[in-house]
Length: 289
Image (cartoon, rainbow, N blue to C red; front, side, top):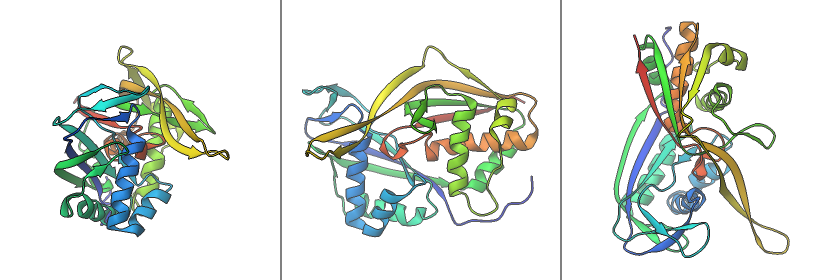
């Protein structure tokens, strides 16, 4: 593979461990609430960074939503946070201004020791761990594999809009890697863009979904006020489950590009509304050579 240009832009993953001393309800689709809480922390730390994340068309921030033990909530479509239980929250940063976003998160969540304030309660931050990579490093990792298989577990509702507001409800190779390709090319430094057409994906990649794990979802991704002052919930439809992607008569450059996109998915999320808890994935790449 040809030498690629160096870049200061990093792809970052952050894992937070959270705990609350109180019981309180959060929506079943908690990504939007968590996103709003993080934006408030970013705004207090650096208003310009907060505005950039809010206005970004490239999905600067990817949020997993809360993972942990929940009880039944008092209200419909809600679940209950339990006191003194451990919850985790994963964040991915793909924005070219990743350093500024990362520093604002560190300032707001670690240095000032501020809680994550949700509508009906708050979490204290027990731990803050991060790791980073680059687009170039992912391409190098992909190039080192001789016969890769990519297994993606779509852990939260993955909402891929391919034609207007019509959502793809199945992890097809074209939809998944087409989404990742758009995110990669929107964030990659000059010289590292990938050129993989939908027809090439269709010819070179095979998807093998695990039917037992497949499910569909309708999740809340936004709340807006209508002209009468009532709150309207905005929903998106998506899927979850595990799918394995293999190659069929693909040349090395296509294998490298698609595998790099698979590795990139844990940082970027897949599909739309990734800042609001959608499209969170875990990826395992196996070299079968």
